Length: 421
Image 1: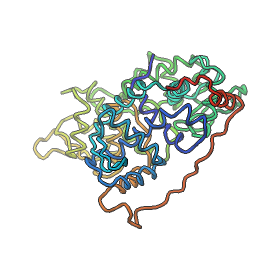
Image 2: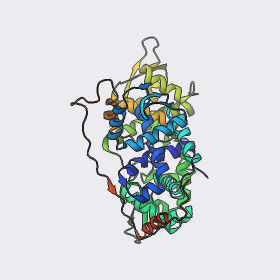
Image 3: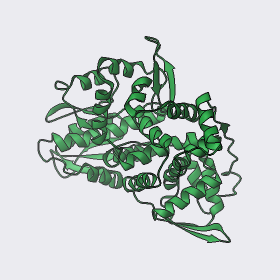
Image 4: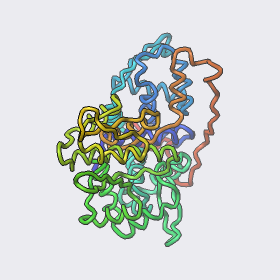
């Protein structure tokens, strides 16, 4: 089944950093469309809400903070103009002003994923996005991955070489049978044995199908008695599953895994999942009035910092109180009803943003910690300030090529068919 367009855009955004920090013929020949559309997704996050950017140098500096070079940035902006997210005003051939109208995340990703599909990505690019998405779910035995996607040696060699240099595809030897295990450092730590044990116990494709089903409805209530694969995955810690206890008794809500993140991001993810679990409880199990639109509840709570009064808030949201997201307080107007007040901190607001992603895009895109600093450069008067502008030294390396990738590159140089448009 083809990936949804918004999922394609999410994977392009995540692998873009790995593509921009390496150079060489094989990257430019095989990944140029993914490179510019992935950069386009990252640029959207950078410029959304700016309305008008009058100083293009400031955007060049901000892009540089994210490892997006000037040529890639301009190519990305041209693509965003094609899908009507920006209007570029030029003077003497150079960009002089940018009008921005980037939509919300789910609509944004849909259009970027569609654009990538329309411009005809190479065979290697299509395989890379599909495989990285599989490896987001769980590491896999490389032979199973190759068989599932029907990869030939040329394609897998390029993916190994570019993925290794870009830190989005790597392999290691299983200590149990010396088989090659493929994983993505974007999502999983090295030697993720618990996932491989799950795949060895059950069919790998069945495991991935279960996780994809969860991704389509994050915070899915789970009945552990009816699904042995999910029961094993939760028991072994493969799937994060917060529990909420209120009038209908304790219920568990399962999410797709996202590892390979720092401690702060783990804390924010735990909060985001708890937020979604609490509103899912009200959606599926509330005894008095059930939540019809969880997204509306989260948006109101984020904006107004309070929800209620309601009799079930006391138990349903106590998990959020334990995590420091807010406080359950008695309603001043009703003796048997309660309010939940959000504790307004940057970390909690970030958790709400991720929770809203779970309910809209259904997929959490890994946060780039440098984005906040980069956005500062777009504020009036900030570009050129010695306290804000710095020269970021990044390691840009030539992609190491295997013999198979060298053969493919030579084939392109002498005029062989590359499949590129």
